[in-house]
Image (tube, rainbow, N blue to C red; front, side, top):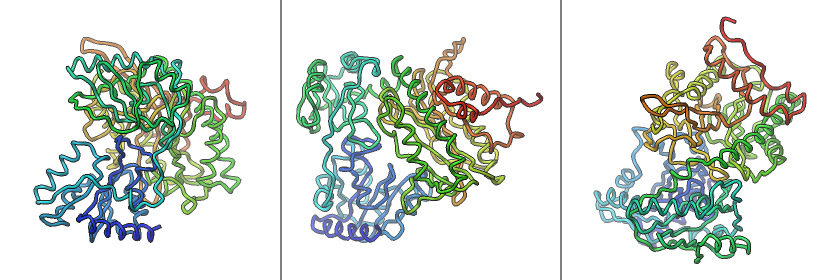
Length: 565
């Protein structure tokens, strides 16, 4: 693979010379600015070989570098071995920005190229401003992958389907009117909608153009008078054509609409707050997903003790069990089945070359989820497959304490997730431990598993938290070359009373799956934390027991005594 990357870089450099360029920048994005993109726009992966969801590659006539965040430091270092690319660990104080690095590599009068279609206007202006300080110009009208990527996948033409109102909970006409009202309040005439999950939510349509994300490639122009869907007509069958007409939406060929607007986009905040039908859909989806997870956990340890299981084989087993559930539509992301040292790679994905055999010892980190037509799931469990070291038990206990502390938190309506992030980290901070990724993200309703605008993370994210939002709770600890621990539930933000100081909220777990208690150092746990675990496991048992065999029910955790009892 590294030889292929080296050859591509050399061919790209010939292209740069022929077009008067000194460098080219490849982001992770597509024209729709999605986190996950159709294969057609995976140009950064094509040129560098790095397949993480976040990163930017830059190639000059003599150097190459790739920037990515802490989730991918270990994976990127491995994937870039033997290639011309130097890893730039984004977010560290010693790491230069992309523009700073380019300015050091190039000279006044040089030209840098980007594909302007996959950058926002603000991004282009920022790059031009920073490069301009060094007298370097930016060109935005080239896409070398269009010429050099000989087997480039086409833009997908998969069929679009209708998301029934019983799951959507609100008609497309109602959503359109709510967006129009927001535009009127801003004194705006219209808005171009380019994010694929926003279009799917707005029109109550779903697709399969992006791996694990039920969206479809398109744009929408929504004005005070009209709505137009810009889409390849091959993606529409008779039913979707008729539906689109019935909701008053016109159709034009795929391409970005030309429309000047200064309106801020109201859809992310609307989409983040789930309606009653969506919330009930989440509960049903989590129930079915929990059944699949318990069946898997009941099977896992005996299978590992019998021998022959690997990271990839248990991934297949869990997927099979989920596929047996009603309304299953696929995975919500590629399963992370990371055994032992692989658990320290935050977004690890096993391949035939890395597929580790499982042994009855150490920790297995299993981060997985599914798309059901009535909800999307995201869950992480770290499982002791046998005897553990003290360090493994300590890290597990600290992560569990952080997970519980955040889950128990009562907080004012409208605060930012940044303001409660430290609660998940407090116990591990006291041991001099931290993690680099965020603590929580929104989850879509049969949409993208990562959904904003709200997050729980240590870096400032001002989006407010409100009742009806989903958010994950997933602290972790990662020790390179040893192990990783993460415990994740998808939570629903619910109201928790009102005082003279305003409305308060709390987090209710939607995920229904036991948490492994065998690694826990109980002397470190408080009575409040033990009570939370007991209450959670009681909820899990009562919800799942009617759908489990007697053997599977016996595998569920029993109540633990509180301290002093």
